[in-house]
View 1 (cartoon, rainbow, N blue to C red):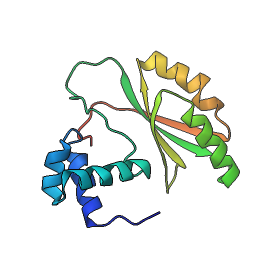
View 2 (cartoon, rainbow, N blue to C red; view 1 turned 90 degrees about the horizontal axis):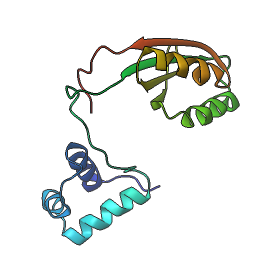
View 3 (tube, helix red, strand yellow; view 1 turned 45 degrees about the horizontal axis):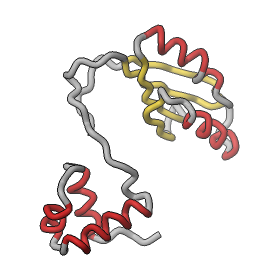
View 4 (cartoon, rainbow, N blue to C red; view 1 turned 60 degrees about the vertical axis):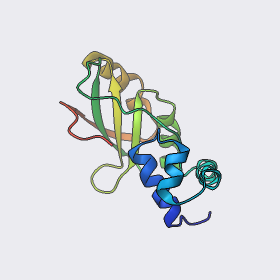
Length: 148
């Protein structure tokens, strides 16, 4: 894996701010020719540094559903137990993000559900059945304050 240089970091910073920025504008901003800039972006994509592009939707727009932040504690923190849990969580479409954590919980998940009853189903049918789960603590989000 090649380390990122200053130009790579500048490309990433600009694309993080505006993923739809044209290659020509990106190239001009980082001081490269359009073809050299496109090669760098494609290489960053190929290496998995850039994993994809997405649209960030205005949070005030009406949308059905609730966001639940879920703290998971595993029975054991062995490599095998963590690998099995992570494989299971990747197969759960309602889990939008999952982070391995330090502190009281082993993982924090961001789960999206239609409503409280739907989250109850996800909790009962998916989260509580994941391998190695000892404790689940759930908090319903009231609203998003900042999202990147």
